[in-house]
Image (cartoon, rainbow, N blue to C red; front, side, top):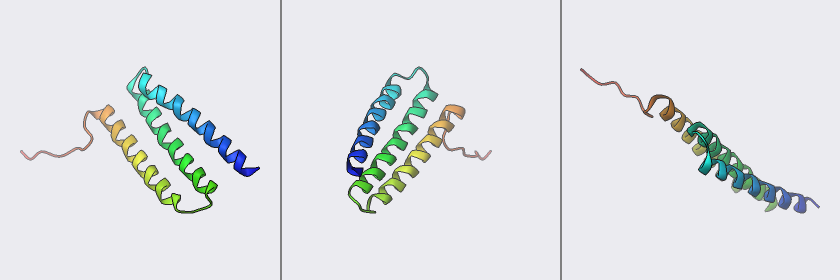
Length: 94
């Protein structure tokens, strides 16, 4: 019974991924695309975690952590680029 529920959840995550990908490609503004990209990262993390539960292993937890860190860093970098026009600020010596 729980295997069926897990597989149905993966199907719903696939549908949510398709909707977020549509918003990423079609988004009316750049902030909408950033949010869609972050949503894709969260959906990917959840899908990998559910696959780990399906296979009854803890190996996928490391992948979930790496995906989470990369999604967070990319969202922050993109937001800073939208706000300021640069990602890294550096002081120039006169």
